[in-house]
Amino acid sequence: MSDIWGYRPAVAHATNSALTGYEVEASDGSVGRVDKHSGEVRAEYLVVDTGVRSFGSHVLLPAGTITEIDEEKRKIFVDRTKGQIRNAPPFDRDEHLGEAGFLEEIGRYYAGTRI
Image 1 (tube, rainbow, N blue to C red):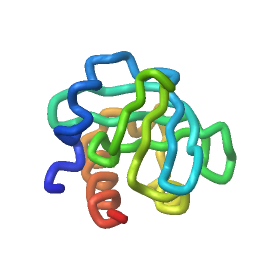
Image 2 (spheres, one colour; image 1 turned 90 degrees about the horizontal axis):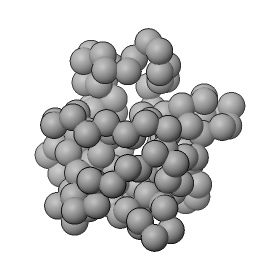
Image 3 (cartoon, rainbow, N blue to C red; image 1 turned 135 degrees about the vertical axis):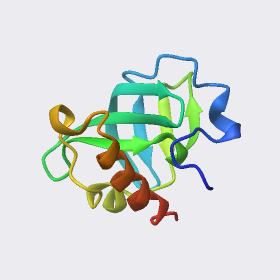
């Protein structure tokens, strides 16, 4: 996948929905719930409230990590492990949200962690 910041064609049809509150599932278990959904072109991502200190309180997941959106079950599935998400550059909502340099750093990290 060349564009980590865009939804995959297989999941793009579901992106018009409000995703806030959906559960997020890594390949090896639950990560948390969507707190914010950005639909900006070429900068689509989810801010996930993990509610777990070992992750930090929020993580940022580029839309390109999403493999499926189950609207009936209100779940989003991503193709990264909990460990890969936990090891991502630390995310501080107030400091990093929308910051281009941070988005580049996150993009490089997740592009290198495909499973």
